[in-house]
Image 1 (cartoon, rainbow, N blue to C red):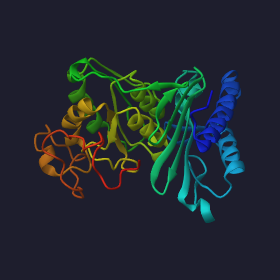
Image 2: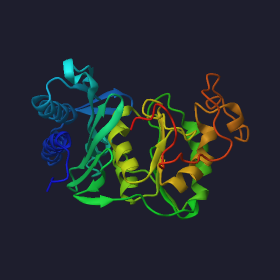
Image 3: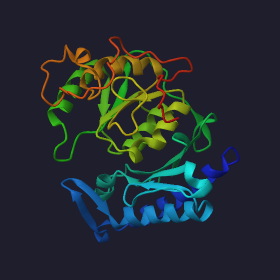
Length: 314
């Protein structure tokens, strides 16, 4: 079943399935699951912690010197020969869904080697769906090769997104952005697990995805799935630097360019001229610490079908 898998990816799959088994067992008796709030509307459960411990235990037993970057337990640098390797882990992406018994959540594990994403697993324990990717080897769902959808017109597209939910999130900026996107597309969905949203873009189940405020463990594995399935992922200005930028857009190359054309004015990193037509420009979107100017036209992928950026994490 895992004949095509890289040895390190095989270990990640084993870790993801162990975590998934814990999550499925706990889902049968949700009333007994202890829940704590990291902050308002941002929950963590004992299941998150147990799943993360199971993942780290599996990875560490195979690769004791590798670094770990996990949502609940933080970041530990690798040692010796393992210094170049970092496992980026979200043990339960979609905790709020899980707490309510809403069956959309997943385990996300990615391996970064010297700053580049090399291996990825997203495992949905409720459907027993296993998404995997190795750099240069394509993306798979349950051993079948997956590709991004082929639609080329934004108006035909089904997009997924994530709503802001924490205190301090840019609600007004997001609502304005959503108001810009919704009339241009066939539908917008909000499933509640960014890692699974990206896996669904890779599989062609949706045509694109955009969200603000994400962390590296939410998007690392999904990003490699998308690019290995022929899609693009970046920040709202269309540049490939997104992993720690807290804004993310993914789609097939044609739709990606059109989405960036709509979203770039809402980027924290675009120059003022990219947002000159934003109506009205709210304080939340006006950034005095803007990065390099955003392109005036929708982003066009560089050769090889990926945004050109020196620090692209793939």
